[in-house]
Length: 201
Ligand SMILES: Cc1cc2nc3c(=O)[nH]c(=O)nc-3n(C[C@H](O)[C@H](O)[C@H](O)COP(=O)(O)O)c2cc1C
Image (tube, rainbow, N blue to C red; front, top):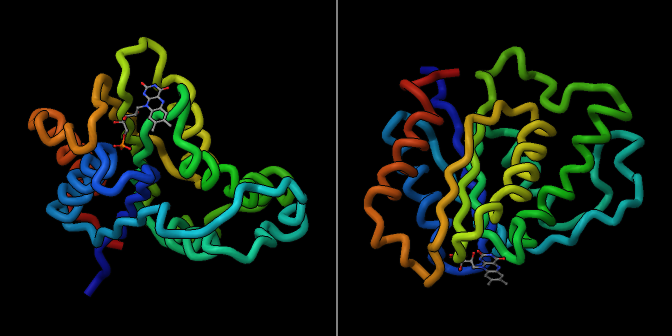
């Protein structure tokens, strides 16, 4: 029997049961209903540093830092679908999400220094796809602009087609998103569509 596609959710919020993580869980529920194998990673449960800018990855595309990012790299490389959820802190993506993305410098190095594919077997796998989920407490018009650019960069470095962002404003108190069934449904549908009509690889 062929394997179902793998959908990995990356939750960057440090808040347990925070708004963006709840939306991500809804998206993963949708993806599971569309036939995907799903896995939720709470970044706050992993210990990793920011990029040291040591250029160690210029040699072979590997990161020389031996911390929990090595586990996360493996998960994101194995995924066919990625859903990244990160709230807005200080007008940008929260630091946990940004630190993880900075550590994808090894993939930048693979593409632009070593001029190799980041996903070596990508021709034999389904097209990789991803979505970005975010929430912000304020109603500031440009509050998501920076985070969306960072998320797009992340998906580009991972040779992953960006399907879109799902960003919601004036969502502040812990778990308050549960009062918005329309938004929860939208996240579920985004996850369902991310996994697509039952795919196999
Ligand atoms: C350190 C910190 C900085 C924040 N900065 C902003 C901000 O610049 N703009 C904004 O609209 N909301 C800001 N917020 C509010 C969060 O975006 C909001 O509470 C959101 O619902 C948190 O999502 P979460 O529950 O998924 O962690 C900030 C919250 C924290 C803790």
